[in-house]
Image (cartoon, rainbow, N blue to C red; front, side):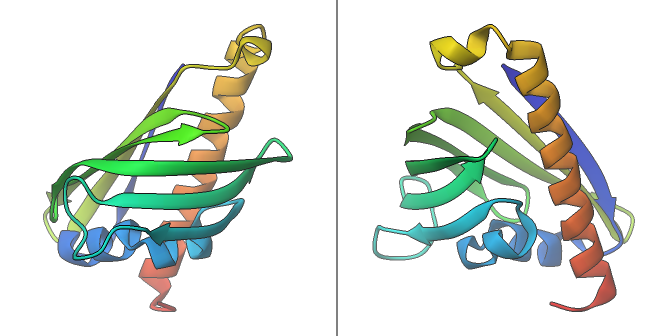
Length: 144
């Protein structure tokens, strides 16, 4: 399953990247996220490890992750495994004084969900779009 969504945020790329990729901010703008932490020592970088707890479609999702690419302020990519395994890729492109943020999500669905693939993809895309609207609102309002 592949899902992708984008948003343009009226803030500079450095600011959007810094907030959107800080794990401690995930619960502020990502629906269902309960906790997101770095489990490796040192700065965020390629190879860093993470742990995430969230809910998707009402079910708990616990995953461990590894950062597969980290290129501030342009790219943050990772893969996770656990209850639900997937890869994610966030890109940030400056557009004059604004930022175009795109999230691409690729998952191998569990057997039971494969039958509902199109519905699952639609629900996932809508959730990502809501998350990005929330991120945009938080950053543009100056609340964070």
